[in-house]
Length: 392
Image (tube, rainbow, N blue to C red; front, top):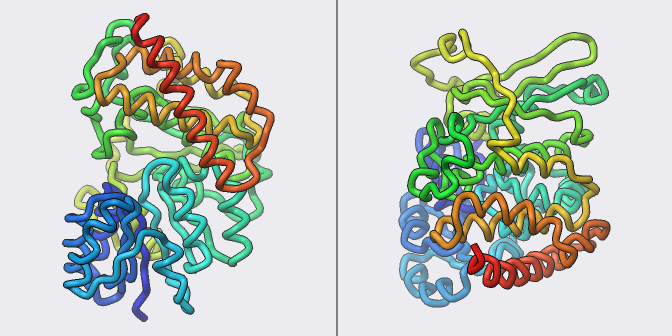
């Protein structure tokens, strides 16, 4: 039976990996929708190669500018998910959300009712809008599948109903490119060096988040929401080889571990084939990546952003503000407008600013509340940096 698939963010790292997997088995899949923010040339080539007749370009200027280009090849282009799918009467088998950043939340909410299974690697949308995503999935009887390697590992290890047996869940981190360096010695390190991740090939933003450990902080928050567990149930361990992705320790004394090579192909492939796929691995199980490997507890001196996990998480605007601040600071760092040290310093300072912290006890009621808070936070951070970067 041919399965229909939608891919959100098809031009990014996770999106292209998904297409690479499907490319090996085209006869069993029918890609019905691709989306991009603004990489028009790439999505045009993808649509032609995979015979996709519906695409979405979220950047409205680029959408208008390139509309005729797609019309000439009989590809229907849209600027929103709603417009692209409003006439659909049949659900797709699977949607892969590979969009990065908070921009992935609205497309997620708009597409869930059109798909039987919703698999996402978009951590920011889960962190900021999990209550809305979970509600929409339950309302439309859509299965939720986490795609981040750590969360997919936990999801695979757990059985329905055994959440109350969990004593501790360990998420592993590589430690990034600066694992053996003290922050004080790399405070002015340039982005090109921070982007040299030792194990993973990822987008720029997530690679910087890996270096600062912010990515792992997000993953802990994300996991606590997906699995409905107190954030104190989670702990971060540095595992430099990135072979083991999650450890679940149960109250009955049993511990489960899940390992796989450093490629997103494995969780994505298993999501697509429902854990029923003969994945080719020339090394089989790699004992050398576990033998003699010592786990390390990350130091808050070297990774000061870990202090954020001491915050009181209550599903409020805190998570939205946290994601927004980090997004903007990473952008400024990649543009060489702030230093690597300042990225940490401003992050920890800004979440204590009264203008922002006054919202930490309030909850967004809908996606528009979240979008407005992102705008408000960005405006405040821009003003803050305009003054404080000059003083540093």
